[in-house]
Image (tube, rainbow, N blue to C red; front, side):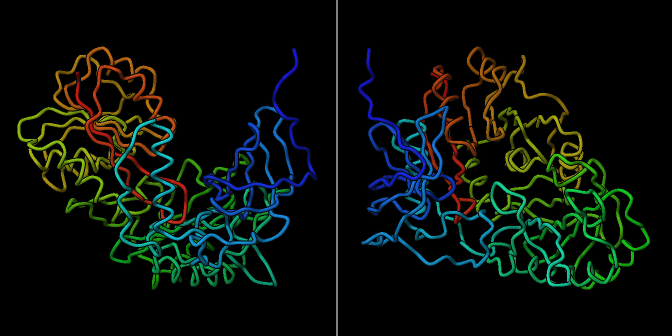
Length: 439
């Protein structure tokens, strides 16, 4: 029996395409006789000639570049706000309103139902509260940059407009201090040298915490001198030794060098103290709006019993508990639970936190809140919710595809609200808040 499908493209072929959507890397995606063709530089609705570079052997997917600029640029095409080409903000060539439309489409395609318009971020520049740079020596001096997408070719990211302005100022001073330290830059091939990465975290009031990632044999006295030189621009400096070759930025340990070891931060009026490696949404203004909206959906909360699975340092659990709910936060990371417990004590909020795998167990609940990583709920959590889940489920998702899978399997729940939020302008990422009730 012969296939009715057209022959697949080959490297070097030229294809006439008009994409209908964007992928996460900002490429226009066109369906060509059953082949998914991803074209760098082409937006939805723009017709162009694509030059094929790579064809997948596993799936009917092809990657291509534009052979020439589109004859009629889309009215949604925009100048990038950021000169840095690190690959992190791959949607900046699309106007912001059009980005929100594409994000909504992503969620609707994954869930198979209409959803509300995406709640826009309060700002599209200067919103990111954490940054990581690869340290390199170029033109005889230390510079901060990134690895180019899918490579270890270093690129300069000077002028990034996405990070908090306080981070930019601290990074400029840090590059000078790194240069003055006399320490050698780490060589990925030979594993010689010391300086690997610089990590910065900023609070919303502009305080900055810096983390210097080095090989573990870096001399501490040189690091302490460098840290002292940075205190005018940083609230504190920590040392993060890391000898791994896996690509992980942070190692297992951190050591306080100078100033404060943590930053004070506030989320919906709740005071936290966060370390350089604390998981926190990179856009707290937008995340705060999402947490408040979640609480609004669940009111009245007084007297209700809730569990917050995958609770992290507890912003959702504490938001609900402060409004009167009896909340238990569950998280596998002991450091995150310690930070959540400290925040509960600091704010005099009666919430409990436990180090454990995400599970409902035999708890008598009114509400389950789940905020899993991108891969979604574990099979065990889905089974718990399906068998004996509480009357109300609030699901916060950063992965539309895994959210769609989980909701499709949780047939005992009826979805009442689906509200996407944009926490990362300039990218294809979108957070989605779902409120569901047991049938």
